[in-house]
Image 1: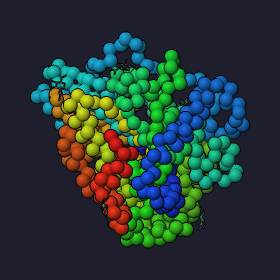
Image 2: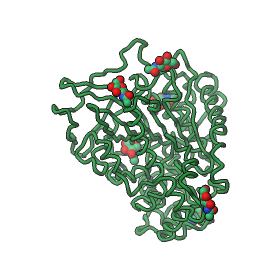
Image 3: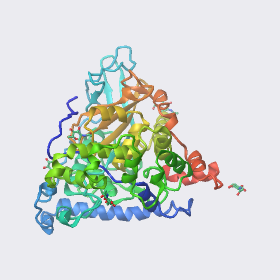
Image 4: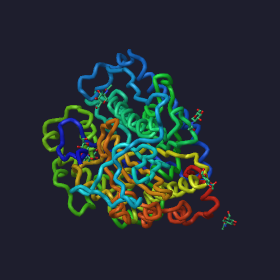
Length: 504
Ligand SMILES: *[C@@H]1O[C@H](CO)[C@@H](O)[C@H](O)[C@H]1NC(C)=O
Ligand SMILES: *[C@@H]1O[C@H](CO)[C@@H](O)[C@H](O)[C@H]1NC(C)=O
Ligand SMILES: *[C@@H]1O[C@H](CO)[C@@H](O)[C@H](O)[C@H]1NC(C)=O
Ligand SMILES: *[C@@H]1O[C@H](CO)[C@@H](O)[C@H](O)[C@H]1NC(C)=O
Ligand SMILES: *[C@@H]1O[C@H](CO)[C@@H](O)[C@H](O)[C@H]1NC(C)=O
Ligand SMILES: *[C@@H]1O[C@H](CO)[C@@H](O)[C@H](O)[C@H]1NC(C)=O
C-alpha cells in the first residue's frame, strides 16, 4: 500500500479538467452530417499530432530551446532548462524477451488464487512480464492491454493576466511538467510492454491503436507517451500514430451533446444545467444536497484555476493556500455531480460506449488469440480526469478509491490499465490503477481486480465473469443512437458503419 499516501505535500497534487455541459455543447458543434464525419479525423489529427510531435522532438533535442522562454520565476516550469533526452533503458538487443521469473501468487491446482488483499483490500502489481511460469507449471501469457491515461500537468483553463507568465503556452495547455511526467508514463509502459517483448520494439503500428480526444493537451500527451515508449538511443525520432475525431467522438467526449436521453436525465437532476448560458459549476452548487461550505467564501468557478496553479507549484494567494484542501474537496463534489458519479443512468449514457468498447475488445482479443490471428495487442486512450472518473465509476471502483485517496480530483497523468492474460489456456483479466502523477519505471499499480463486480475474491478475474461486470453501464452504438436521436432513422447497419472509429 506504499503507493497510497493520504498526506498532501505542499507542492504536488491532483488536478481536474473542466468540462461543462455548455462547453460540450459548443465543442460538439453542429451535429449534422452525423454519418459523414468520420473521414475528417485521421488526416486532420495526423497533422496536429505531427506538429505536436515535431515540437516535442525539438524540445527534447535542442539544448538551447529553453532559452526561447522567459526565465520562469516559479518552479512551475521546472523541466525547461534540463533538456537532455531521458536515457532509454531499453533492454539489450539479445536479451531474453519472453520469460521473466516473478513472484506471482499461484495456487498449486493451477487455478487463479484467491486474492491476497492487504488490510485495505487492494493488492499491488509490479511488473508484468509477458509470460510467467511457476514450478507447478502454471503458465501465464499476456495477450492484450488497454490503457487510459489523463493528460499531463496543464495550465488553468481561464488564465488571468497576472498568472500568464507562469504558463507560456497559454490557458489549458500542457506545462513542461506535464510533458515531462507524460514522458515518464511512456517509460513505464516501455519497460512493462516493450522491453518485456510484448510489443515489437521496432514499433509496429498494427499492434496498437492510440485514441485521443481532439484537444491539444490530450493529443500532445499521447504523442509524448508514445515516443517515450518506443524511442531508443539509435532511433530517437519514433512515435506512434494517434487517431482522433472532432465531431461525434463517441468514445472520449462523455456522450455527444445533443442526446435526448441525456437531456432528460439532467432535467430531472438539475434543470439549470441545460441552460446554455449558465455556468455549470454554479448551477451544480444549487442542485447539490449539501453545498460545500467553502464556496460561501470562494467562488466555485475559480477552483480550477487554483488547483492547476497549486499543482504546477505556482504561488497562490495566502487565503487560498490556507483553504486549499477544502477548495479541492468541495470542487470534487461539484465535478462528481456534473459527471454523473453515482447516477447509473447518466453514467451509462455518458460512458456506456467506451465501457462497451473496452469490454468487447477484450473478447475480440481473446478470439483472435484463439484463432492465431492476433494483430492488435495494445489500445491506448488519451483522455481527461472526468472520463477517467466516469469509467472508474462504471466499473464500480470510484467510490472505493475516493474513500482511500485524498478528496481531490484525480492527479495529472493517472492511468487505468486493463490486461488480458492467458492462464493455463483460459482468459483472465486484471484491472489496475495508477493514482499518482509521477510514474516510476517500476511503478506499483493498485490492483482493483477483486473490487470489480463479480470478481470478488479473484485476483485474476475470468474473462466471462469480468465481461458481465457492468451491464447496466454499457451501451452499444445502435442503442445509444436510438436513445439519443429517437427521431432519426437508425439502422444497425448505419450504426455499424459509423462505428468504424470504434473498431477494435
Ligand atoms: C521530470 O520529472 C521528474 C519527477 O518529477 C524529475 O525528477 C525530473 O527532474 C524532471 N525532469 C525534467 C527534465 O524536468
Ligand atoms: C518486429 O518487427 C520487425 C520488423 O520491423 C520484424 O522483423 C520482426 O519479425 C518483428 N518481430 C515480431 C516478434 O513480430
Ligand atoms: C463567480 O465567477 C463567475 C465568473 O467566473 C461570475 O460569473 C459569477 O458571477 C461569480 N459569482 C459570484 C457570486 O461572485
Ligand atoms: C493455433 O496454433 C496452435 C499452436 O500453434 C494450434 O494448436 C491451434 O490448433 C491453432 N488454432 C487454430 C484455430 O488454427
Ligand atoms: C495524487 O498524487 C499524490 C502524490 O503521488 C498522492 O499522494 C495522492 O494520493 C494522489 N491523489 C489522488 C486523488 O489520487
Ligand atoms: C430507414 O432506413 C432504412 C434503411 O436505411 C430504409 O430502408 C427505410 O426506408 C428508412 N425509413 C424511413 C422512414 O426513412
